[in-house]
Structure formats: structure tokens, C-alpha cells
Length: 340
Ligand code: 1CP
Image 1 (cartoon, rainbow, N blue to C red):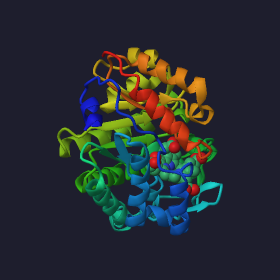
Image 2: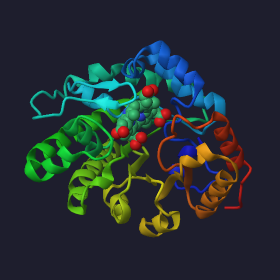
Image 3: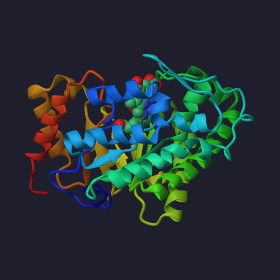
Image 4: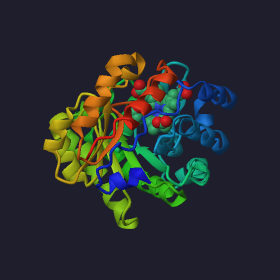
């Protein structure tokens, strides 16, 4: 598997490629299955349909990796917090007041269908295509649990970090423990590597970033690596800025997924030797296409020349991207082989 070669520190040209949110509303075949499933949570918990939407982008584009179709908010739901997805509004949860209602022991029964999807996808994928398991990072998931909705501001979580740090810490501790068990379940079911999405890492000041993002991520990486020698873990500390090098060094992730704003050369300089990079094409270029897309792709391939790199976006594909622009992206990457 090309992806695993790169995660094992090999520079490969052209690089392996997959895209965040590669299964999603930009694909007509996804919208059809989504309509059949009813709501989004039912789709995540239906192994047959979740397997189908995981495989759709692989069939269409031949990506080097599939990512399990699920959501980072399935874990809080499995822990007992209510969750619904309001049409066009994103996730809604009853903002958490305390942790007494959260039940780690009950979670595996609720997310069992997700692990069944992992087994089915692994069995159906071509042997050269890697399967990526994932979870939200504890800080990011805690933001949704404490604020009850997304959007990126999370005012209640940020206030609680000062006003009730014990509550925030206990949510993080529960999430770190539950995430270890959840990701272990995905690895046992057939995931070839795993990714931690800390999509809102960038809202915290440095001391809180260390406590809420780095420390729980470090604990998860250590536990998974000690139980699964050789397992590769990708971190995505989105918008962490100058704390990138510290995140990689202290958590022990094998690879770091870069957000759109991060300059590849600055990231390479900030991270320890041997770091593998993933990213970070601007997802908007997929909407624009044309010469801008060509320039963006060439620039990115050149920036990571000779460095182990997994081609990806800096954040997820948006629903309005024309599917043919992704076919064009694949052509550009695969016709751009450069001597490593
Ligand atoms: O209407 C629909 O069909 C739902 C849209 C959708 C999809 C396709 C949501 C709601 N989640 C997903 C799938 C999903 N989410 C995947 C599947 C695999 C793939 O990438 O193809 C993954 C890995 C996620 C992870 C996820 N969910 C993240 C981390 C990555 C990121 O985008 O930063 C986050 C923050 C979420 C929360 C979430 N779920 C859905 C939405 C709209 C949101 C964001 C809400 C907000 O604005 O805060």
C-alpha cells in the first residue's frame, strides 16, 4: 500500500492521494444513498450503506486510501449524549452540564455498526488501497459536547476552560479513554492506520493547547502504539500555527496533516526530521479548477519534493465542487511525477 510506504517514511513520486470528505454531497451517488438512508446518523450506523459510500470515491477516482464513512460525533452519541443533524445546520447536541450521564462501558454496543463497516470496507477494497480509521481529537469533540453545536466559535467551551477547568478536564479524560478503545476497535476490524481530527485545535491559547490538545493526543498515540506495534497515526491539529513542531514532537504522531494556511517549507522546518506530511491544497481550488488548480498542484508537489508526503487538502471538500475537477486533480498529480 502506497500510503503505508509513505507513512513509513518513504518519499514517493507521484505521492499517494486521498481527500478529506472524499465521500460526501459533491457526489451524486452519495446524495442518492443519503436519500435512501434517511438521515445522516442512520447512514453512519448502516454498515451496508456506509460501506457503499466509503467505496464510491475509490471506484470513481482510484484514490490510494479510503476513509471510513462515519463522523467524529458518533463517539459522544455512543457515550450517551443526544445528537441530531439539523438539515443545513450541522450537528446539534444538548450542551453537557456534567459527566454523570456519560457511560464509557455502553459505547461499544452503540458504535458496533461502525466497526462492522470497517470489516466490510476492508474486505471489499483492492489490496493496494489503504483503509483509514478515524476519531475526533478529544479537544475538538469536547467543543461540540460542551457548546452543543459547531461553527468554530465554541464560546461556552472557551469560558469553561477558565471557569470550570475540572469539567473540561473530566470530559477530555473520558474522551481520551473512549477514543483509545474506539480506535483499537477500528484497528482490530481492519483499519490500516488511523487519523485524529483536531479540527478546532486552533481556538485555544498555548497553555490550553498543551493541556487539551497535545496531552490527550499523546496519551491516545502512546496507548495505540503500545498495543499495535507499527501502527501509523496521522494527527490534524488544525490552525495550530507555531505550535506545530511541539505538537508533532510531544504527541508522537507519525504524520501531520497540514491546514490550508500552513506553508509547507515552514512546516518542514518546524517538525522533527522523519516527520511525514499530509495536505494541504486549498479545497477552494477544486471549486475553481482551471489554471489556478494546476498552479496549486504543481507548487505543492514541488514543496514536498524528496519529503514523505501524502497528497490531500488543507480541509474537507465542499458540496459545490464539480466532480470532474477531482478527476482533473488526479490527472495533474499522476502526470507530475518528479525525480525524488
Ligand atoms: O448532509 C450530510 O450528508 C452530512 C455532511 C457530513 C458528512 C459527509 C457530516 C456532518 N459529516 C460527514 C462525514 C465525515 N465527517 C467524515 C467521513 C469520511 C470522509 O471524509 O469522506 C469524516 C472524516 C468527518 C469528520 C468530521 N466531522 C470532522 C473533522 C474533519 C473536519 O471537517 O474538520 C468534523 C469537525 C465533523 C463535524 C461535522 N459533521 C458534519 C458537519 C457538517 C460537521 C461540521 C460542523 C461544524 O461546522 O462545526
